[in-house]
Length: 193
Image: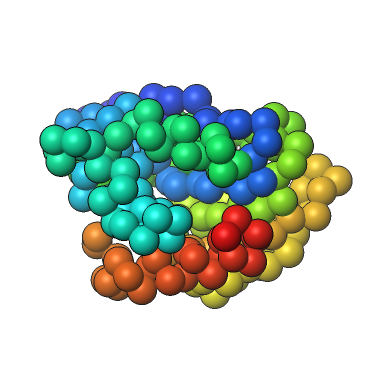
């Protein structure tokens, strides 16, 4: 049976003043979304991690009813702070009907040069998992940094930092507070905090 190619449901979130581009791999199946925006799965801790880093409150981006993330608060926060969001794949084949990166086959990667043209202030790219790191490395000439650190690279006449961050998925076995500490270090190094 031929597998269906899934197109990315959203355009990159690209505030023109963004200094950091955060890249995941690809959204989970739609039935797992709690909002129509990046990191939509309630079981993914990205918005809790950023709540801890910036507001010392892991539920800062949780909606009033506690059942979803507050998309408008997240969009406003990312715009104000200069954080762009996208994924490293714009089309995939999902070999299992779940959110695991392990079963994603990238058919079409992100148009990184096109996206960076929209982000003239961007000085760093952070990947939020191994699949995203592996896919990004097919697009740039860089060495893979250790988790929580960065390596320099050049792209489109720009010198940038490539950060490899721990996955925000709960499948990645590290307490949320430890993940937040690693993300906090990156944001401090980039002058966000």
